[in-house]
Figure 1: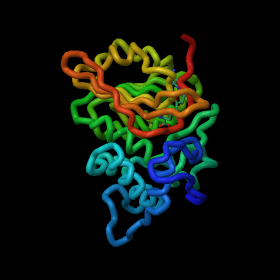
Figure 2: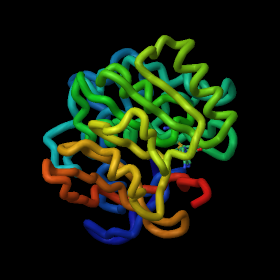
Figure 3: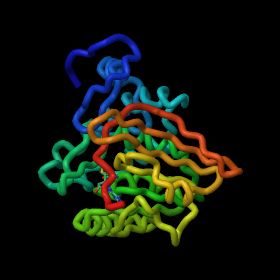
Figure 4: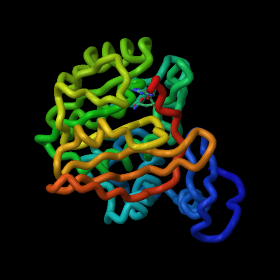
Length: 259
Ligand SMILES: C[S@@+](CC[C@H](N)C(=O)[O-])C[C@H]1O[C@@H](n2cnc3c(N)ncnc32)[C@H](O)[C@@H]1O
């Protein structure tokens, strides 16, 4: 990462890093991050690219108010081979900390965003999770080893087919895929312990709130394509009350569909 960091600390004007925006303060933190070879993190292993990503992931963890990204989340990031989820031409770049094109105008998200969103869900081994926006299948694969079952919906036919076939071929047996509009959730398998939306909605879809269990968590980017989008953490309390927290400004492709 390179470039000038405009503004002072905590300036909230987003800076675009490929398809993701961060504030100048975060950008500054990322730019200053140095990979320390004497102190490797658990998520790094032998993959040099992932090693570069991990310190950045840890910086984001403190922004979410946690001490650190959970070790099992980093371990999952290290275990799932990202190069298996990108088109052949993008394989040389698969371990870089950036989104990559997966065709149909869509992207596989940056590894640190995947780690951050996964950690925010606080996945548990018995959880049943809904993902909206299968894309390459990478996020579903990361969740697969952390929870009991992942249901994932994709609206673009070619991606739904490709993502489903890939997840099956790679042996992610606890992931179910389907073609459809994820705005409406997946009612047959609701309620879900957590829901992750990987495209930006203009508002939080009411059907997803309904399909979230009491005590459940949803992570969703909200905002229009041309304005600041915020990553929201939504928690449903035991009485069905909703608390939403803004985590950080981001930029995602839009949640599409007709409604
Ligand atoms: C940033 S990409 C997701 C990346 C994906 N999670 C991965 O790991 O590769 C967003 C995805 O959401 C899909 N999408 C957009 N609107 C949708 C909708 N209403 N229902 C389901 N999927 C949708 C897009 O087609 C795209 O594949």
